[in-house]
Length: 306
Image (cartoon, rainbow, N blue to C red; front, side, top):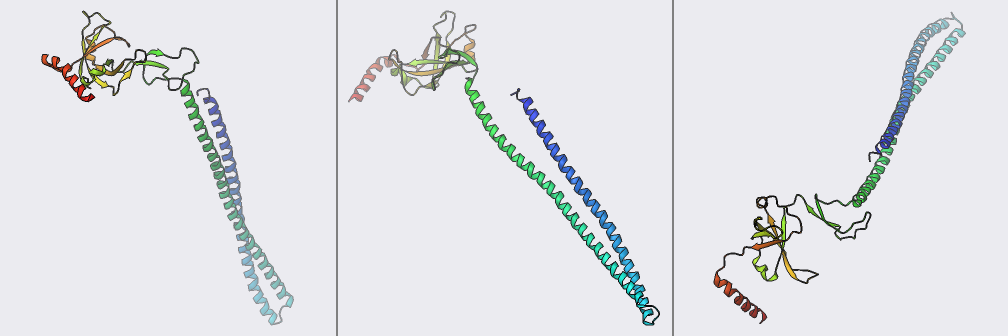
């Protein structure tokens, strides 16, 4: 991933330059259109002044024409003087009309320029939106590929849920195949609470229960220097287990050890697989109960067989 960072940075930089160029082009088009609109406004201002001047000329000619007509009515001026003024008035009216039309055309061009500016902005937004949609689609596709690749990468390495010491391994070669649903190794966790698993004979299972006190003796150590420690039953199997080699059936029970009891062992170090003898407390029993117990068991068995 670190090796791909320069390439990603280069791609981001390239896209940034492309966007900056596109933005500069948009700004240039906007500037040209804005300048054109300003020129049209100046043109309108000039045309308006010309039209106003033509209007004043028309007013003066109209005043003069009325006076000349009065003189013509008194036969003081020829008719050509009247027609000349009328011709000048008509010409000025036409010129003023052209100026008014030019003003209207310039105003229309300004409105068109404003629309072009809006269109430039809209086109850029549309292009950016299209590119963004494509990028998001590619991003989603890359994210899916990345998740799939990371999932495959996770399957390449076997990771234990906890730290510990490898106890047994079924694969001993590099690149060896691991059979599905088969354990690749057994790991003894470092942080887990130490427990002892013991076998209980089926005829004794009625005397074993969760929370029952137990005394543990470690046969691998010197009995004179190694004390017996106390524990408690934390779990009893629901059904019997049969040893495939010996054919012996038994229940399994787990006995938990506390830190205070383990401290009594001193420098003695417990390792997985070490043999342990467990003595479970089943309550106080009288001498008579010891003598009567086999008889009562036989009677109960006889009633069940009947």
